[in-house]
Image (cartoon, rainbow, N blue to C red; front, side, top):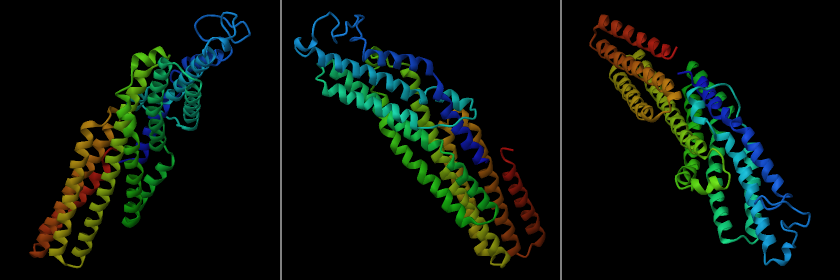
Amino acid sequence: MNRRRYLETIAAGLAVGGLAGCLDDLQATSRSDADRTAGNGDGAEDDGTGSTDGTDDSTTGGSAGRDEADREIRMAAGRLNRAGASLRESRNSLEDPESADYDPEEPQAFLDEALESLEAAEDAGPTEAQRADIEELNAYAAVLGPAIEVTAVVTDDGLEEEVDRVNDAIVDENLVTARSVAESLVDTFAPAQETLEPALEGVESLDADRLADLAITDLAAVQDGVRTLESVVDSLVVLSESLVSLVAGHEALEEGGTLADEEAFDAACTAFDDAATIYADTAALLEDGYADAPEGLVAYFETALCQSDHLERAAVAFNEAAKAADDGDRRTAEEREADAEEQLELAEACGA
C-alpha cells in the first residue's frame, strides 16, 4: 500500500474546505465588527451617544451592559463562523481529494477570539436570554476546538516522512526500525480519537435553531465535517495498526526463513504458521475498518486487504515447503517455495 500517497490524500481532503464559505464568513464578521460602533443591531442608528434613541443608556437600568453583551455575542458568532470554515465540505473533499495544506493557526486564532468575546459578554451582565446564547455558542466552540486540533494531526506533513521510514526500513529488512516507527503512528492517531470524542458528543446536542438565530452559518456542513473527521481518524488508526501487524508478520516470516536455512524445519513451520495467523488477523482488522471507511479511503483498505491475503498465502506456502523439506521431498519443497515467492510478488503489486 502506498501509505505516503494515502496521507497526502488525507491532507488534501481535510484542508480543501478551508476556503469554503469564506465570503459569507467575511461578510458576517464585517457585520459583527460594525455592530461595535453602529448600535445594538436592531436596525436603529447610533446618534453618537451610544444610545439608539438619543437617550443615555447609563440611565436606563443596565441597557448599556445588555448592548455590550449583545455586541460581544455577535462578534463571537462571526469568529466562530470563521473558525468553522476550515471544517466545512470535508466529506466531499475526502471523496474527491486535491492537493492543499491545512494550517490550524488561523481557525484556532478565530476560536480563541470568539471565546474571549463570550467571556466579555458574560462579564457585561447579560440577560437570561443572552446567557442562553452565550452557553450555546460555547457549546459550538467546544465542538470546533477538538475538531481543529484533530484535523491538524491527520494532515501533519511530518507524518508522510514517518510512513516513508517504515517502508524504507522494510525494504532494508530493518524490521526493528519499521516496528518502532509504525507504533509511533498508532501513538499519534489513537490519542486523536480520544481528543475528538467531546466534539462528537457535543455536535449531536447543538441547538440548530438557536445557532441559526445567532447567524451561525452552514452548521449542518460543519456537523457533517466533524462526523467525516471521525471516519478519517478511525480509518487512520486501523491502517496504522494494520501496518504494525504487517511488520509483525514480516518478522515471523523472516524468522521462518532463517530457521529453514538452518534446516530447523519444525521451528520454521511454527514461525511460518505464526506469520500466516498474523496476516489473517490483519485482514480481519482491515475488514472491520473497511466497513465504515469514507468513500475516499476505500481504495486504500482494498490495497491493504489485497496485501494481507497474498502475504498469508505466501506464509502458508513457505510452511508447506518447510514440511516437504523436512520429509526429504525436495521437489515439492522447491515448488511450494516458488509459489510463496509468487505470492510475495503479487502482494507487492497490490494497488499498483
